[in-house]
Image (cartoon, rainbow, N blue to C red; front, side, top):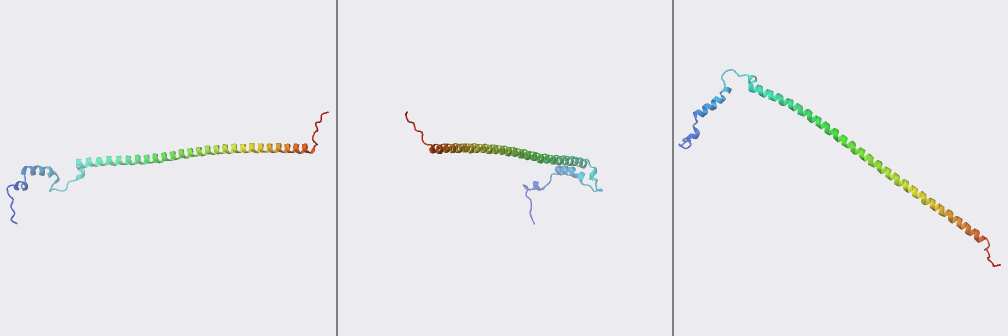
Amino acid sequence: MGHQLDTSQLPYFLGNPEQEKELYSKYIVHLTIQKALDVSESPEYQKIKNENQILVAETVKHVVERSELQDFKAELEKSNQRIIDVENDYRAQQADKELASTIKQHEIEMAVQKGIAEFKKELLGQSQERLKKNMKEPPIDFKEE
């Protein structure tokens, strides 16, 4: 197309042979014309495989620990609920006792008031009988003799 690089842009497009040689030597072990290499025999693969086995074992351990913690949490919640239920039962029993005591006191007060009312009625009846009796009897004459 007729494009030409001027001298200021040329260094950006030309490679440095020494840098390219270093880069090539770094990756040449992965480039081969021979038969395919068995990666599973390389020490790096073995290291990664061992690390993976360790991570799998740790994951299993953490899963077990997590499930145990969830079980403990559920058990703790059940225990807390049982404690709350026992406290509520105790409070209900205390309220029932207080109510029974209040009812008993009220019944006693009613019985006492009833007894007092009956006693008053009895006294009133006796008083009325005496008055009737006294009215039937002739009045006593207190004459001076």
